[in-house]
Every structure is written in structure tokens, then in C-alpha cells.
Image (cartoon, rainbow, N blue to C red; front, side, top):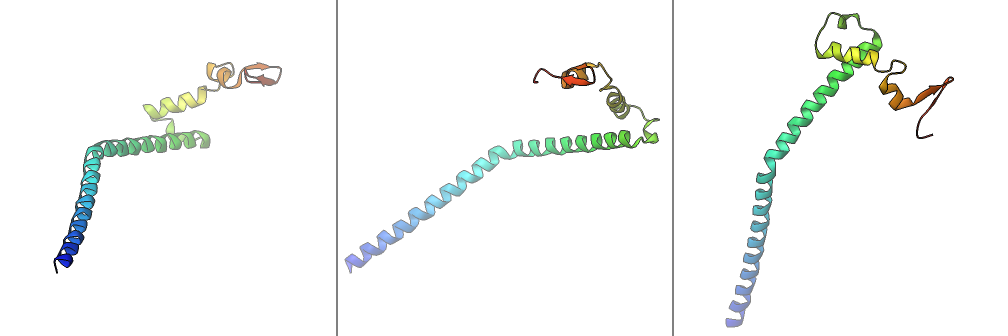
Length: 113
């Protein structure tokens, strides 16, 4: 009978250790989540704003490509972007030279060629 009680107590202790181990693991997970939750929310908000800016810039580019006349009366960032799109690849501009190199007799050469 003492042997059975001893075996039973050992089994109970094993279960208690398992329960304590699992509770410690879950506690550590909760602590990590609590420490990183704020930064994750900030990153999520930053990505939302980035996606909104990309959406607006795609609309501007599409309006420029379509020749949208409604963009002419607007001022601010949109017209600045439209103006930059219209003048960025003017022949001889710094952007064109950096991207395509110096133009030589109907062909372009870059430093990579």
C-alpha cells in the first residue's frame, strides 16, 4: 500500500511539473506580446499610411497617362507630382543621364555596358 501511495504521489508531482512548465511558457508568451504590441501597432499604422500614399500616387500617374483634364485646376502635391512626371525625363535632364547615360547617335550607353 505504501508503494502504491508513493507511485501515485510521483505521478501527481509529474503532472504538477507539467502544469507549471506550461503556465510558465504561456506567461512568457504573454510578456513578449505585451512588450512588442505597441511597436507592431505603430508598424501597422505606418504601412497603412504608406499604402495610402502609393494609392494616391498611382491615381496621379494614371491621370497623367490618361491625359486627365481635371488635374489642371488642382494645386498642391498632386500638381507638383504631375509637373515632376512631365519634366523628369526631359532629354539631357540629370534623371535621364543617371538612368540611361549619355545619348550617342541614337543609342544610349551607361557605365554598366
